[in-house]
Image (cartoon, rainbow, N blue to C red; front, side, top):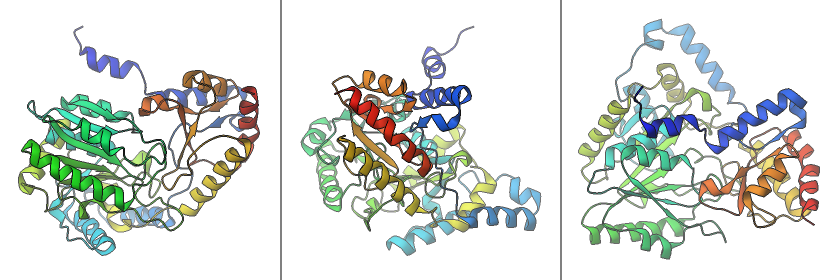
Length: 396
């Protein structure tokens, strides 16, 4: 049978994160879930707001089946898109309309669609700033682009602008940012976003074409200590936003999100049409109808963010007390831990031998670190801290 070697390679090897998650499930069956300290997957343990289930029940009880389960417009239900626009306009002082939104099966679909809409053979480089979600490479490659990685600024996990400027060239089509960040938990400051906007505007003029900023924002609402996340479209006009409700209201398995193409984007109508075309070519038309209706009613709400803050404080404080080095997360629900020793894979394997599952940071473009997803039960974090100490002591 003749098949695509590239697709076989992708399908026959899970992502490192998923592989570790499946290993955790296997070990849990062997030794009991309570004996596995699984920080592998960003799968929220904090439940959705009560309004989500109430809304689902109301929709099922009050609307005919075809309205609930039938097709919507390819780009999404018009009323839902308007509701999302109204919510963002109220919260951020913007002026979006329903025809600036394309509903998708989550942020992964949004990213794949944006890259499919933007990449051409003449402009085939996309920049990611480490640390970054590893699937960016898959999405970029599928669109026909080369992923260019800017090394991490490991002092505060902002942006190394000298390295970013050096990476931008005549074939740069887009730069992807993710703030709050997976895996570091860092939030790009307003100063960082303003500096980025000025750089991209200057480089767009130099290259003779717009360099698009793709803002990957599934963790936008998950921030701590009164911090505000700059709304990127207000700083750089050629911004596309990729959003998912997976994290903000704990709906990862429902796969619902959107692409936002603000009116300020150069050639807005053509770009939006290209987004629609990319969604069509990838088979991402008509996102799940019931979930569209649900998020249209609850958009702007969140799960209990304070639960994540409590988890962060317990984990960060406990690790620092043991002696580990890490930057305190400002948002999302990940902690990026500096390894002991000089071999990231060896550190992960030594942790794994203790049934402590942490994700190798090399895949995020940042060797020497591991990611801990603390969107887990508080009790598991408490039980894991003595194991982290045992791991730490094994290096001493």
